[in-house]
Length: 127
Image (cartoon, rainbow, N blue to C red; front, side, top):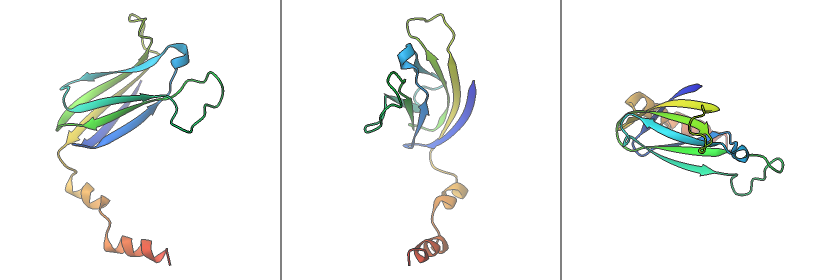
């Protein structure tokens, strides 16, 4: 089982690609542990437009998008199961602790903000 941490700001989204096994009947499902209104989840399944599978019969990837809705913390449990076998253990599992903040800490926000020196260096390389 993989365990990860994800830090978001309200309104931010993060998409995670998960290996698919749809051709064998397995699909990823989520379970939110903790306050359910801290994050919003959406799924997309299949190959992106213009991407061809490597071979016929290859399972398509599944992508989960996690959006920060309000400040707080929730644990997201992702399991890969066959929905018609509810008593069987998942073949894959991943846990993600998601922390949602109102805004980025000042030190992190400053690190993301370009400085005059970094802009100058960037623009000098265009000449």
